[in-house]
Amino acid sequence: MNTKAPPWREERFQEIPPLFRRNPHFKQQANFILNQRSLQMQYRIAIGIVLFTALLIRLFAAMWWHGLAAAEGRLFRFGDSMSYWRLAQCLADRMPYQYGGADGSIFRAPGYPMLLSLVASIQTEETAVWWGR
Image (cartoon, rainbow, N blue to C red; front, side, top):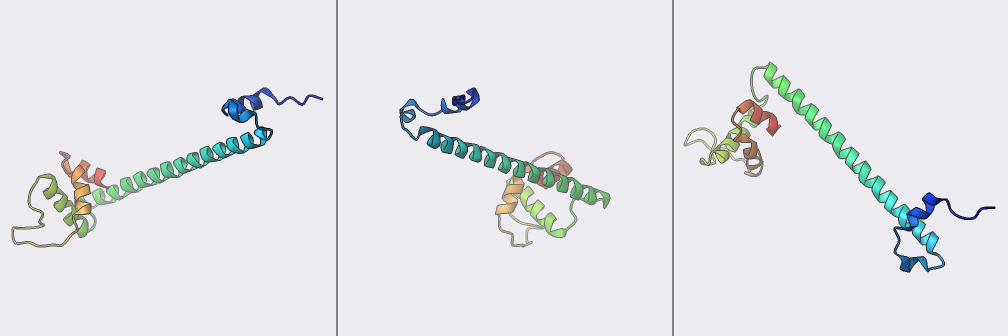
């Protein structure tokens, strides 16, 4: 009867420092540690798959929404979106943070327009709006 572990099994233990191999419970502890590493890797892969799937769904939704707006012949389907976009363009062009004319007023917290201003400076407005979506 052969009690020696298969070679692939022995290779796993090479990752453990030699100091720990002197312990009589080394194989049990090493298996536990290596199984924990395996679970962590599986967890990371699962999280990566979920995030990648979410990105694909988001890109599909952006293309679909952009197509609906283009079919209607406009950039935005809601008036609220236009106000955020104009404020983002003002920030990107280093103009006053206002919507409409010089006496126009609207209250919008600057966080979302600041984020949109990163893409608002793209030359073609349709491309910039797509990236904003």
